[in-house]
Length: 163
Image (tube, helix red, strand yellow):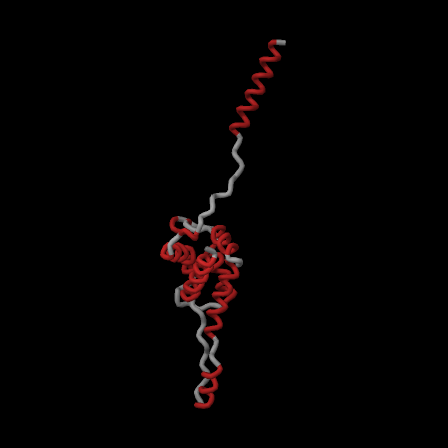
């Protein structure tokens, strides 16, 4: 019996040791409270995130709302983030937007829609152009630099609104 007891004690000891060496469950990384960032920090860090669109486009390139939204959301995602892009995660942004009663996708979409609406020709201008016999002016299209600027402003506005 003493041999069995010592073997059992030894087995229990190995089991306890093995359990302490087992990997801890993956924990969610702590959330960064973006409310604590200064406006300058938010502006710089969001610019670092959104600049990813300039890997495929020049700032003056034009685009449509759907394409820009997809590309800007991809830029805000954490895929391929390195260096300065790691200051703000998409999860941090989503948490802040949830506090403000919206989502990152909605803020991006709203900013792009407003920009696109600003690009539409104004009725009075067209009436005056027709009366004068001038050709109809094509409305300008939103550029990527304007899209980045307006999305960044919209996100900052919502982060500040959630305070």
